[in-house]
Image (cartoon, rainbow, N blue to C red; front, side, top):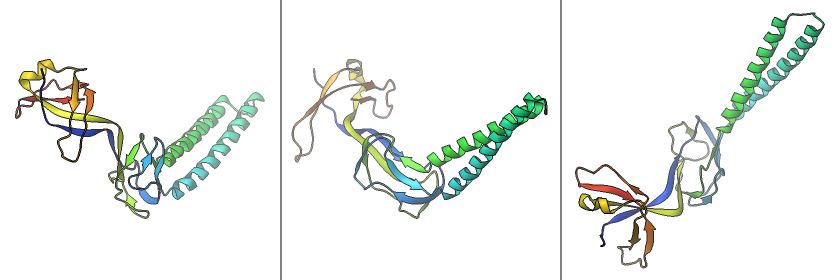
Length: 200
């Protein structure tokens, strides 16, 4: 028993790339239509102010570390109290936390590819100021193609995970066919079409 339905092709994964922080775009490291790997640098946001803050935090961290060592040595000779050591240890921990926080913020100035795929058109240029809602580009993973289609309600019981299907192009320019398997059947029926969404 066979059923003919019209479906649509979709990429395995699609991600809209947005920055995680506001700032000025310093450089763009991809070409439109280029294939990229997971972790590849796409966009660099200006980090000069953060680098200056990091240098200050590292200096404070080093000073706090020296103060802690000094306080611990003085405590051994009973020249100060345990409270002084605890205070110095707390200040050192806070300084280290500041350095770690700035490193996290610096990492966010680099926008990287979340997975292997192809980048589409970019909407921004070097020198543009961006916020976290700005769309830089879109990445599509085409290593596997999904097929999305609707199955009428009366046939849904016969379609389940693993059900095989054949894909045939509807355009005159395309030829050949592909095979696949269903991996998802929506349990909710669309009231307007009386059909279920199926993906394979």
